[in-house]
Image (cartoon, rainbow, N blue to C red):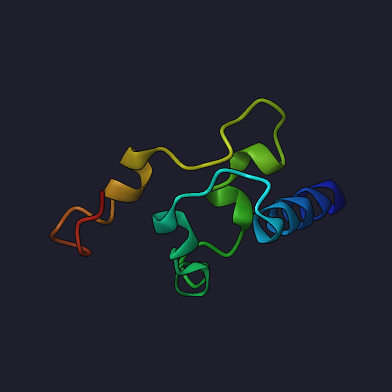
Length: 75
């Protein structure tokens, strides 16, 4: 768990410093709103805790709720 927190802190710092490639849409993502549904960062960001796993969620993961019926559809 400590490794995951350190990795997340490093990711946050790198985004804040602009050293990663983050789109405007990702910067506008409402983490606080989604934290009520997903209490662990690794739910969407498995790569923080599991070496080799994807850091960003697959579009299909988001689309499972954001299908236009359950939640507003997203790109």
